[in-house]
Length: 319
Ligand code: UT7
Image (cartoon, rainbow, N blue to C red; front, side, top):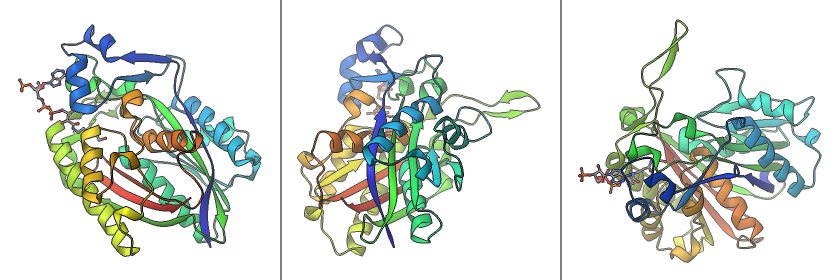
């Protein structure tokens, strides 16, 4: 038994914040942001929009593309670091908003920017084990609410959005391999250490990042994990039609593509218009390339991501 993606969808909030808008907020320039990250603009959720609202729109589009009824879904996984509330999970809220009754498991998965590859691999394992037939796997974030808008080293990098896929049991792959890794010893490089204690937020609720440290770690582990997946499946970089990386920084994507011997023409890049949307970035990029016709049946697709934790991983698929 394997699993295959049978529908993709995504959603971006209406409000767009450009680098030029940011020049008015903090001591930065469009040129600095663009040259260091490849970002031009990002979307920011309205005050009234919750992570589950973004997830709902992306999910409805993925379900429509899959041509199924929402009630056929028996597993909901939402990868997010910006859930609606402490509990219940955003996945349970989404399941209710979608009107899915008689659902199997619904849960959130917290692996920061590594969240979508973690969630997709987890859903694939549920399906392979015969514990689910049709999974909704979502990456959704409103990271803008966790940003210190006076900290130019972080607030220029992130954006809000959601992407979703419907994954269904199938006699042929589909998902060929998923490799996940974690190393908590470097957690101080990227974190929001705020927590609720005795009714009050303790620590810092905002994202803090050692950008250079994250950059070096990301390039190293992403190169290792993509090589690991290719080697185990007797493939070479040239066998990959599309690399769909986590969209954090164009320079990290270029470094990974170079390591694979892939031209940037084979890399799906959306970071310019989305910024870093954490767990949402891969399904947003995937949906973009599916809908504009770049991703086609029979192609080998490689997803990869790294995020706070650290968590990192890669998923190899036959489309
Ligand atoms: O999803 C995973 C999460 N994060 C990432 O993937 C981020 C990985 N890291 C990066 O992408 C890069 O390290 C950054 C884009 C965050 C920063 O680029 P960098 O080339 O590593 O710059 P830097 O942090 O070394 O900063 C260089 C200079 C500093 O000034 P001094 O000390 O050289 O005078 C910073 O203060 O740039 C300054 N700087 C800024 N200047 C203008 C930092 N942020 C800004 C800014 N605008 N927004």
